[in-house]
Length: 93
Image (cartoon, rainbow, N blue to C red):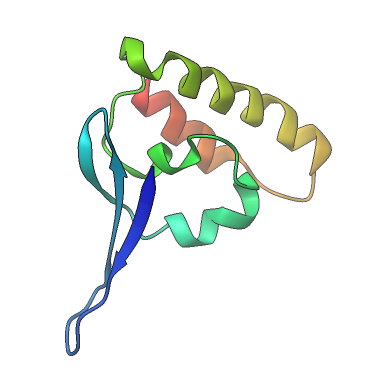
């Protein structure tokens, strides 16, 4: 998996893309950058900022890791609000 930022002179907004060999390139929501600190790099968190369906069989493990993160992190880091990430996950399952 590779994440790239597309930056061009005199062009706004910038674009962020994730490449996954299973499904190709997916454009990501710019909220990705703000969520980096919340997710702590949990496996697959990038998909919360794409339109990818995590209900697919090949995303079974990714969905499991994200569910676990959103169950445990609010307990470990109670000063952070994970509601938006929980909504994003629910929309992709």
